[in-house]
Image 1 (cartoon, rainbow, N blue to C red):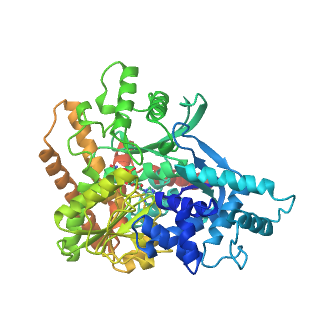
Image 2: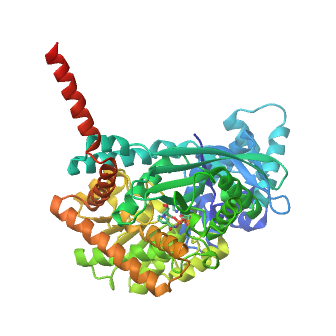
Image 3: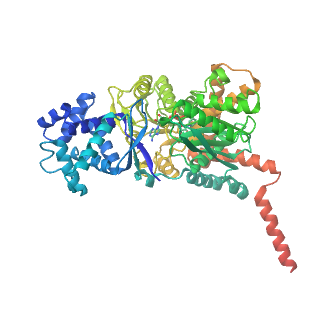
Length: 601
Ligand code: NAD
C-alpha cells in the first residue's frame, strides 16, 4: 500500500527556489555564482528569504530530498480557481530527482562542472545521461522540464506517494491483542471471556457515494466498530483519515472499551471513521459525506445504543451534521446521539478542552508520585490539534515550560520555552507551527527524543516503537493520542524508569466529559463549566489512584495496571450478565460429560 506524504510549506518554497534556478530567475542564480557549492548557495538564499537559520534550511532540504527520492508518484495541486490535483509524469519525477541531486552535497548525477552555460540545457543533458533517454535533440525532455517548472512554480500543494514508511508501521490491533493477553494472564481472566474480548461485538462497513464539487461521483468507505457493550452503550469517536484501516478502527474501539471501564463510566467502547482526505475536500463535500455516513449508520447508533464523538480531523461541526441528520430520521431533536457538539446544540461546557484538562490532572498526580516539580518542568508536545494544543496551553498555565510542539508538517523547539497560544496563532495563519518565530526546526522523531521532563505524544499511533524507545529522555510520558507507544516500547520505557500514563487513562478526560454531556442531554439540564471541571477532576484522579495502586500491588507498569482495572470491570459485567462463570464452566461441564460417557463405554 502506498503512503501519502505532503511537502511542508517550507519544502515547497525550497523546491520552487530550486526550480527558479533552472528558469534563470535572479534570486538564486546570483548567489550561485558567488558561492562555492550549490547546496550552500541554496540554504543561504533560502535562510535569507525566509528568515531562518542556515542549519534549519539545510534540514528542510534534507527532508525534501528524501521525499523526492522515495516518491513513486507525485501530485501537484493547482491554485484557485482550478484548485485541482494533477499527476506529475514519471519523466518529470526523474527530473525532480536531477534537480534535488544537483543541490545535494553529495551530488551523483550532475556533471563535474555543474550546470554550466544554459542551465536548462545542462539539466536536460544530465537527465539524458542518467536516465538514458538519448533520442532526438532532447525536445521531449525540454518540454517535460518546462512543464515541471511551470507546475511547480504555480503549485499550492505537493504530494508524494511512497512505499517507504510501510515496513515500520505496526498493526495497532495486534497491540490490543498483545496487551489483552498480558493483562488477562495477570488477572487470571476467564478463558471464555478472554476469547470473546479478542474480537469486536459488531463491525459495520459502509460505502458512501458523494457527488463532489466538480460533478464527479466518489465513493468513500466508512466503518463503525462496536467492540463491547457489557457496561453500557458503546461510545467512541469518528476519525477522517486517508490511511484509515479497519484494523485501526477496531483497535481504537477496543481502547475505548478499556477507557470507559478504567474511568468507571457506565459505557462500552466503539469507534468509527471514513477513509478520506478531509484536507482536500470542501466543507460542502464533507457535509454530504458525513450526512451519508449518518444515514447509512442510523439504525445502529442512538443515545441508548452507540454514541459517536469527534476524533482526528472531525470536530463539533461534524457532530452537529450527524445530530441534525439523525434527528431528521427519528423525527425529534436527538441531542444525545453524539457528543462533542457545539454548546448551542446541547454540547457540554468544557468538552473542547476536556481530554487535555484530564491529561493535565493525571500529569499533576504523576509528578507528585515521581517527585517532579512542575514549576520547573519542560514539556514537548507532538501533534498540535485539539488535544496537543490544549495540553500545551494548560501545562503552560500550570507553570511548566513548553519547549517544543509539532504537527504533521514538522516541529519547532525553543530551549527558553515558547508561547503555546502564539504558536497556535502561527499555525492558524500559516497551516503549521513550523516557522514559528525564534525557534529551531525539529522533526517529529527528534521532538520525541528531546531532553524534557514531560513528553505528550498527541498525534497518532505507533510514534514510540522499540526502534526509538531507548532514546526517549522524558521522565513522564502522558499519552494524549491513542496508542502512541507500542507494547514493546512500553516495556523499554518501564525498564528505563520512565513513568508512562497510558492512553486509556491519560486521555480519558474526553470521554468522561462526553458522558457528562450525555447525562446533561438526558436531563435537559446543563451544568456550569466549573461543575464540569470539578466532576472531571474527581473522576480521573480516582481512576489514576486506582490504577497506581494496582501497579504497585502487582508490580506492573501503569498500562498493564490500567488494563487490569478495565478488564476486571468488563469481565465482571459479562459474567454477571450470563449468571455463571461462562465458557470455562461450560467447557468443564462438557469435559465431564465426555469423561462420564467414556467411563460408561
Ligand atoms: P486533531 O485532528 O485535532 O489533531 C491532530 C494533530 O496531529 C494535528 O495537529 C496534526 O497536524 C497532527 N499530526 C497528524 N499526523 C501527524 C504526524 N505524523 N506527526 C505529528 N503530528 C501529526 O486530533 P485530536 O482530536 O487532537 O486527536 C489527536 C489524538 O488524540 C488522536 O490519537 C486521537 O485519537 C486522540 N484523542 C482525541 C480525543 C479528543 O477528545 N479529541 C480524545 C482522546 C484521544
